Image 1 (cartoon, rainbow, N blue to C red):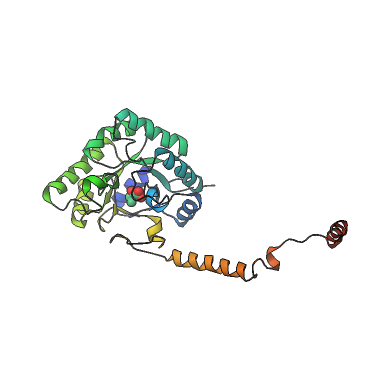
Image 2 (cartoon, rainbow, N blue to C red; image 1 turned 90 degrees about the vertical axis):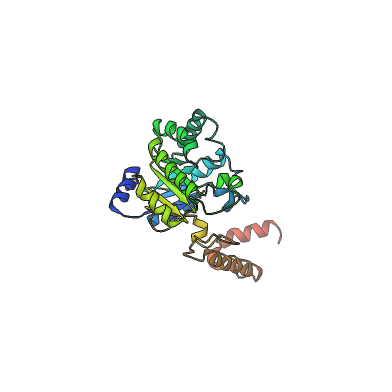
Length: 283
Ligand code: KIV
C-alpha cells in the first residue's frame, strides 16, 4: 500500500511547525525512485535539465515537450514525494490563457502534482489563472535563470534597497495570486529571512541561507556529478562521479584482459546438443 503523497497542505504545516522542507531535482525514473525512497518531501523536475542532462549552456532551449518527456519518467518513479515540473521559457509569459493551456498539458500528460514559474508581479496573472484552474503553482524569485540575459549573468539578486523591496513585493503578489510556495535563488540570507517572515506560504531556498522554510539543490551537484566550477551555495554530499569512473575503468580493463565475462556470467547448453551441432557443421 503506497504511503500518502506529500501535499501543499503538508508543506504549509511544515512552515507553521518550523520543520524544514526538503527538495531535490530529478530528471529520470531511476533517480526519482532513489530520491523518493530516501524520503525527500518534494522533487523538482527543473529546467536545469537543459544544463545537467541535455548539455546546453543555459535553460532557454528547453521545450515543453522536453519537460513533459522527463516529467513522465520522474512521476513513474515516485510514490510519496510531491512532483513539481518547471514551465520552460516562454510557455507562460505570452498570455494568461496560453499559460493555463501549457500548465494543463504538463499536469495532464505527466501526472505531476504542480508546476513552477519564474518571476514576480509580471506573471501574477498567469499564476492566478493556473491556480484558479486547480493546479498548484510554486513561484521562483531572485536569480531566475530564464532571464539570465536581462540579469547580466548568474548573480546574487536583491542586494540594493530597490530590488530587495521589489522582491518582497513580488513574493506577496505571488502569494495573493495563489502560489503555494516560492523558491528564492541566490538571495542574501537576511533578505531571504525577511521574505520568509513576510509571507504565509513556504520559501524554498537555493543559495538563500538558512532562514528559508526549506532547501532545494540540483541532484547532480549534491552527488558530485557536476564538472567545472560549481556555485558557492552548492554542497557536495557524495563523490558519485569518482565511483562511477572507477566502475567504468574496471569494466574496460576486465573486457580487454578477457576477465569479463567469467563463468558466472555465461549460459550453458546441453553438451550432446552442442556436439550434434558441431557434427552437423562438420567441425
Ligand atoms: O531548474 C531548476 O533546477 C531550478 C532549481 C535550481 C530551483 O529551478
